[in-house]
Amino acid sequence: MPLEYAGILLNSAAYGKIPTGRPGHESLLNYEEAGGRYGLVPCYLRLEDINPAARECIAYIFYNGRFSRAVIPLPSVIHNRAIHGGRANRLKLASLWNNGVRIFNLQTRFSKWDIHKILSRHPTLSKHVPTSLPAGRKALTQMMNQYEDLILKPCFGSVGRGIMRLQKNGGVWRLHYKPNRQTGQKKQRWVTRYLSAQDLTYSLGRMTKKEPYIIQQTIPLATCGGRPFDIRMTVQRSYGGGWHLTGMFAKIAPSHTFVSNVAQGGSVASVLETLSIALPHLDAQVLIRKLQSFAQQIAEALAEKLPHLADVGLDVGVTEQGQLYFIECNGRDMRYGFEQAGMIHEWKMSYAHPMGYARWLLDLSKLPPLGLQY
Image 1 (tube, rainbow, N blue to C red):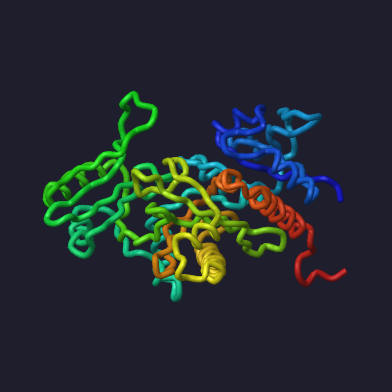
Image 2 (cartoon, helix red, strand yellow; image 1 turned 45 degrees about the horizontal axis):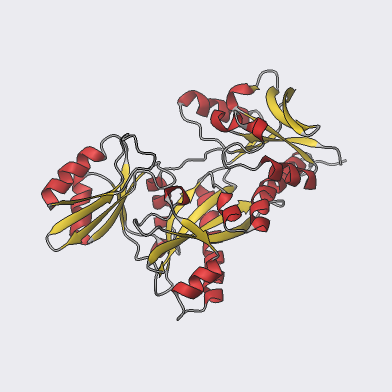
């Protein structure tokens, strides 16, 4: 089988580190290994280096033991691993797709509110979605009257940035958050403020005015060693186009906060071990099978509404009773959690599945149209 190009679309920051072999949290050598498995040559490119008119691009290729830039034919299949803002970039991506370039995970950042609406309208998944509203003073008052524990998160935030927790203690509300300002400290500390309901709606109105937020009922997460945890599940399409659960690991919050994101100080651990310790009254293996089925259902439900979806990271919460709740969807899943958890097979497969899907899309493009007679 002749080798063919498969594009990996990166942001400029990651692209600039390609000569090191490890731009950000991506493992290019894992892409190379997976490409060899499927007869593909991974090429790493930026959107601005694509010339649609000439059907060519400037890309990094691994050759003779090093990454070198070259002008190559534009790959007909591209895995998007970048976040592209701005109308011009979105139009260019749409134009490439309309001209036959199959870009999967065309969109990598989704509004948390849009994802909530999709799943809350699903006939079976809706009961696993916490009550949520777009942030605003009226919505905040409504949710504060209904619940005594709330989470506020930026609609387009990632890795736990900007998230806040609001808890009622007697007649006073406690707001726990990390200030979004420069203090000269390498690591910003979490802050707790005590406010009346009236002062709170005014303060939060100002804090959330700069970007859209979502207000959410706090999920009563199970704890491991007194620390809440959730489950990160990587779900991907592979050769044949079907969804596969690549793997999962537990994300355990540090002792000083409720946020489990690794970027915020959370730690990673085996799901089986974490569930066995945290929920000894439940069968961990049965719960893992439920998690596997749950993740696949979510991916399939989202794919029905979000075109070109092929690679997502899902955060799922588990309660003390073993109930499952959807937390959020990540369109650019950071796979390094598998590496940190010592799950090397799953880490490598998180690169192999997208390459398998790229191979399948290429093979599909070579099939004759249905009904064509020879």
